[in-house]
Amino acid sequence: MNIIYNIGTRAYFSAIKVAAAFGHRKAKLMEEGRKNWSALLADKMLPLKGQKVIWFHAASLGEFEQGRPLIEALHEKYPEYRVVQTFFSPSGYEVRKNYKGADVICYLPYDTPSNCRRFLDLVHPDIVIFVKYEFWGHILQELKRRVVPTYLVSGIFRNRQAFFKWYGGIVRPTLDCFTHLFVQDEESKTLANGLGLRNVTVCGDTRFDRVIAIQQQAKQFPWAKAFAGSARFVLVAGSSWPKDEDILLEHFNNHPEMKLIIAPHEIHEEHVQSIIGKLKRPFMRYSQLDEVKVTEVDCLIIDAIGFLSGIYRYGQVAYIGGGFGVGIHNTLEAAVYGIPVVFGPNHTAFREALGLLSAEGGFTVSNAEEYDAMMGRFLSDRAFLAASGKKAGAYVTENSGATDMIFSAVFNK
Image 1 (cartoon, helix red, strand yellow):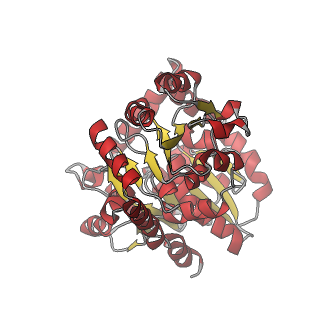
Image 2 (cartoon, rainbow, N blue to C red):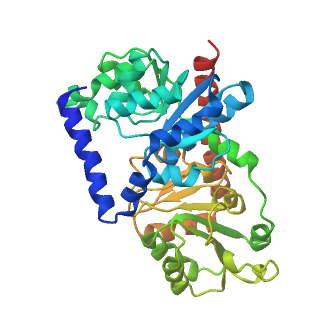
Image 3 (cartoon, rainbow, N blue to C red):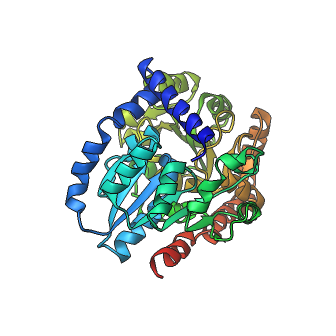
């Protein structure tokens, strides 16, 4: 690899080590998770010796969920394959380290030539799938040298990425290492073609297939159904942050005709107490659930994880948090239930949010006044509410199918 790439990546990995030494939680997890990685991986790979192995790599949790439909299709159609799943970030590894669909789950070692050779000697993959992005130069070049079929799925390219800058020559060679690139949209294909890449296919985003699968497999929650009851209007607020809550809780307090299920992004006690402090109507926490008395409150606070994707079914409208800060969370998990989705202004980097806006199944608000007006319209215009929900659901359905396209191209040759 280019010497500048080596200097840059080594500086990055050194920065992680320094941050870990000073107690940075994420950096510490990254360092601890990679201790003795080679010996630990060797032990994990022993039961897989002599079997066909497919290695999936995802930067973090969101990318893993994009690759997951392929893993599950693989188990269904080719159960003889074993799966190795790697993560770069602890936000993926820590949540999915016990995922039953993979035979081995571990961190990807830092991208140095010796690490890459050792990793591939141990895993010995027959096929490799990178999800969305993560273009580590040494591992990709070593895969190419070993002639291992390597694919990018649900890829997305934008002008702001390093590949398309004046200094892009440092990282562009990594793209030549892929056997094929499956990208989400025409813009990505055009940009890739501009770099001389012709092994590019537009197939959409596997997240649409994933949320449909989640919807079909989602458990019913009798306590949530009882809470919603015959309420005229239930709002489900998912992955909310304090700035979202300032707006939606003020509106909720002033509108007794609506009920609210709120699942905050962070469920530590301080955040839950801040929500409680803003409420002026009867509420109940999931951690203190009384399935009889839940019908007597107006707000249900989900202070636990693992429920949100199934809870959207009980709402007439979904509000997705993060749009007044770091960026919105998963809009598709709500839209798949055929309900309109509302979110804040920081959404422009999210292709699916822009798609929902274009389909008229998603709506953005920039302040409390716009939020009040939007909720007011949903409350007063039932035809608009129903039509908007139908459009949101149709957007998800119409954009599904990427998994089958990729699977056919990769595995059915």
